[in-house]
Length: 398
Ligand SMILES: Cc1cc2nc3c(=O)[nH]c(=O)nc-3n(C[C@H](O)[C@H](O)[C@H](O)COP(=O)(O)OP(=O)(O)OC[C@H]3O[C@@H](n4cnc5c(N)ncnc54)[C@H](O)[C@@H]3O)c2cc1C
Image (tube, rainbow, N blue to C red; front, side):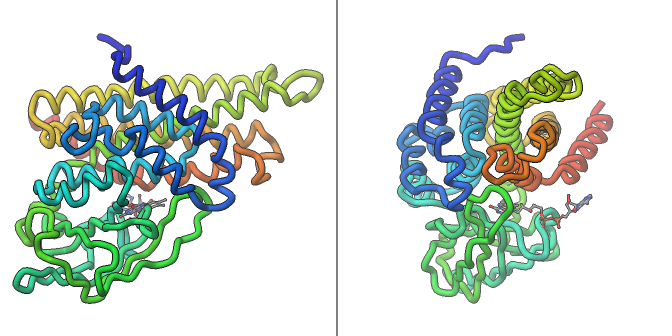
């Protein structure tokens, strides 16, 4: 067993830590207050290679593994969850979909400019009727000659108000439910695509989310990622879910580290009954518990990332991401890290006493941001269902 990062992963950690301390953390409060990430900051992320970490050099990337990817995300999330959330959507979720499943032409058109930070993408699954049960998506598609006509509504689309193209999940074959879903790229400016206003949120305020309305929105059939009605979309989605779960877990690790930091700073300075509150057992034990659970969550999440890399090497990039063990461990690690982040911000709030309610205190932002981690990559409940499904399958295989 080797628990050490390799030289490349260590160097990614150093670069991202320094970048976050210099460029991101000092802006975190302002980003929250103004509810906006400066576009120059996103461009800087592109320039240090954040958007291309996952992709081969031919697409402008650096071809890093899942462990390095999670290391980078964790560092960025410690400085600002808003920046990490928005940046990670661009760097992985929507671009990975194009990289793994798009044609060469689609990669050149959408992936390459996204890696450079010249164009932004968004991933549109959730509808006003729900986000967990994708078998009942209501957004429809009709193929007419060489065009697709899309009707429906999406909501909570991350980076929606600023994106240049939208990977849109449509129900192509209703009877097939989840396996009848397809994905079509809809560029901004397409007639019939209406982009809603930013949805104001209590946390992750720097991240822009909006509704999208598709009203007889017509795009060329070639914008479909592997055809329409061929039943590939559901499988494609399965192919990136484990990675999305690990990524979201890495966001949770970064936020937990930030919560532990502010809690320790405050507890070390605040005096009650004649000594810093960090010396009172009631407070000290909270800090010790969060720190212990953070170590456990980190070990678990990086085990999941290591396992995914191992399986990718053994059985190929998409199959490796869908390996049953990877699916189970990534769901567990995501739940563990993101539920820990909720507990960590709650304890950090308590340690800050009444001041925690002031929006001028960083702990308040961390507490408000944490909620956002519960939804991306599947909710805790949905991930628990995945875990139990995999446990029963494991038994059958034995
Ligand atoms: C900040 C933010 C960014 C987002 N970005 C995007 C994005 O970029 N693209 C996108 O498509 N969506 C996005 N979403 C939406 C997100 O994916 C959904 O919120 C998530 O999938 C859950 O869907 P829902 O909110 O409709 O909850 P629902 O599916 O309505 O679920 C409500 C509750 O019921 C529980 N539940 C549902 N089914 C079961 C069951 N079978 N057993 C037990 N419990 C169950 C859920 O766990 C949840 O607690 C974002 C959301 C947020 C808050």
